[in-house]
Image (cartoon, rainbow over all chains, first blue to last red):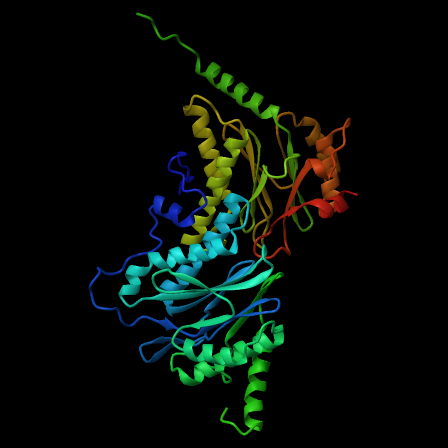
Length: 268
Length: 225
């Protein structure tokens, strides 16, 4: 490796993906030629949800990855800190999705270090949109990645949520959203329980409930795995930054949820 | 026909060294020292936005003295090197030694092959891990690299600062002790430096994955009081 130095006209600035291109490190390997058959046998990951509450946002995701009809992984992580004040969750083809998150995390930190300032939340959302757009050729092959981005906007003092489509288009959500194969069920559950200015407890509860319902309806979404002790990942992003909700708290809430359903005489 | 006149290589090198030294001596000095929980870097720098000290990677910091545009270019290339390496391999594979060597090679190359040497002196500091001790790599304008495990002083006229720190330095001293000694050494006998005229940053355990943190305003004033 040599010191990456550029002339002023070729300098990539704070753009990490641009730097990788100049150094000829392939950040987004293109797999097949356009028009070939959709790829099969890749891992897909599945229900992620985000909702706003009084102090910021809650984000949660199940842990299952599937390959066709088989379960490929039971403890996959789909919710990641993007930087101190934002989080990103992924649905879609697992390999490219995780790689995209890694590139996104590196990009945000790279920008911050090179420029000496942090990108605005809007700027971060845009950056992720560009990455999704560059991924479009692979999405056309059946390897779509659809992230969900949420963060705490320090300038506005509020939590914000952005959803994406495969073309990189991104849309700000005012209250909540979910994506992935169980996203529809999760969204409906949140919709029924959502109010403005929920407190942390209620917001985390609602996120957990929505994943529970999604797992109940969608075969590619994993519910709480009581036998192995694997639970969905839940995190909050507030003025204090990204905080993962502890596994114990998540486990307790699922146990309480199941217990409640049982005593109410409903199907769990 | 005019003959190209001969200049002895010794003379060329001497002239270049003198040129670089003069450029560096025009700026203010900088001190870095290890302490119980990490490394503290202190620069005599009244500017709030043009930094001499900055973050390179999780446990690596950069500092430079001399010509700002020149060491800033080196800073950015260091970040690029570290981030691409961490992305290609893993975060723990990024270490200060290889970066310091790259800097040394580049500075040496410019010094011998270019018209004008870089008028900078730089520092690459790395927080220790279970396996590695904290390291301060001091790289001079002509590519000479030295590693220090106690403290490093960068700048033009450093003898007095080195002597003062040599006297004061103790194993496992606390952050306030180390900071006050560094500021005292930088200020010298006939002036005082306060928080407004200083740029201070630490690489310390307890800051999470990214160990680099700037000390500013009340926190810095409190530590200096």
